[in-house]
Length: 124
Image 1: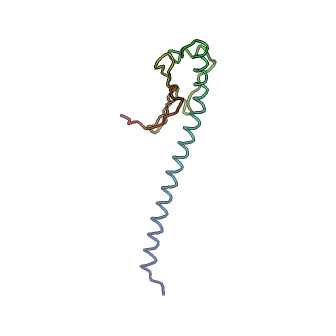
Image 2: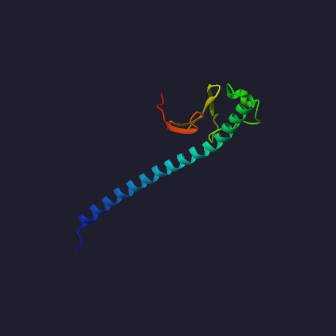
Image 3: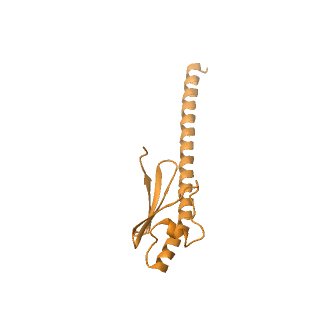
C-alpha cells in the first residue's frame, strides 16, 4: 500500500532539488558566458597592445594617450559590447590597457609584468 503523505513529501523534495539544479545551471552558464567574453576581449585587446609595443619600438616611448596611437594605426579595436579600451601610459616605458565588463568586473594588462589582472569593483 502506498502512503499518500510520503509521495507528497517526495514530490516536494524532488521539486526543490529540481529548482536548485536549475538555478545552479543558470549561474554556471552566466559564468561560462562571462569567461568567454573576457577571453574574447583579451584577444581584441591584444591587437591594441601589439600596436602600442610597435609604436614604442618606432618612437622609443609608448604613446602618451590613445589619440596618439590613432594617428599611428588604422583602427583602434573596441570591446565586444562596443566600449573603448582604456589606455594609460604610466611612464614612457610602462602602460596599462583596461576593459570593463557589464557586471562590475574588469581586466587590465600591465606592460611591466606583461600580465592580465582581472577582478571586481564596487559600483556607486
